[in-house]
Length: 270
Image (cartoon, rainbow, N blue to C red):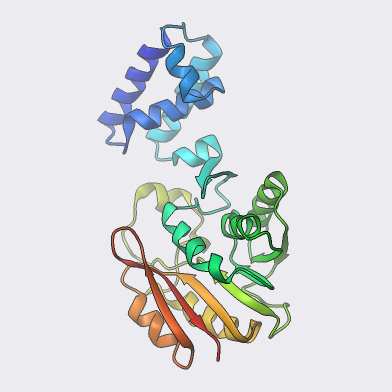
C-alpha cells in the first residue's frame, strides 16, 4: 500500500463515521504516524507505506473513530501562530480564544495575571507578543505541568502558581487580569469528543454556566490595582448576564467573534 492509498482509505473510514474534516484529519494522523509534514506527504504519495507507519496510522485512526480528539492523539494544537503541546489534562485551545488575545494586547503592560491557564496558551502568547512577564494560575497540577513545558519550549516569561483562582496572590497588585473560564452549563448537550475527553473542570460552571463568573469577577476586583482591567472569554449568549455582574465597573466593552457573537467582555476597575 502506498501513501496515497492509505490516505484515501483513512478518509473513507472517517467519512463513514461522520468525523468532521475527514480528509484533513487523515492527513494530520498520517503525517503524525510518519513524523513528516504535509508537503513531504504529497511529494512522496507513491512511496510504499512502511509497516511501522501503518501500525501507528491504524492506531491513530482507531482512536479518532472512538472519539478521541485529533489534538490529543498528536499532542499538538496551533494557537496564535504557535505550536502548543496539549494532553487530556488541558482544554484544547480554540481559535475563538484568540479574540481574547486581541482584546488584551492593547492593555498588556505592567503586571498581568492569567487565571485558569490550562495549556498556558493565553499566558504564553501575551508574554511573547507583548514582551512582558505574566503570572498564571491553575488549580490542576496536570495542567500546570503542560503549561510550564509550553512556556519553557517557547521561551516565554511566565511564572505559574497552583491555586484556586488567585488565592494566595496579593490583592491590588495587577494591572490586567485575563481568563478563559469554564462556562458550559451542566447538563448541556455538547460534542462527544469534548464531553468524553476534555477535562470537566475546564468546561462546566454550574447549572447556568455562570458560576465561575460569579467567583471570578469579585476575585479580579480584589487582585487588580485601581484602574486595572479584567478581560474574560464569554460563553454562548452569556454576555448580558456577565455584564450585569460587572455593575460598578467602568468602560465595559464587548468584543465579537467572526460570527458576530459577543466572545470577550472587558471592564475597568474604578
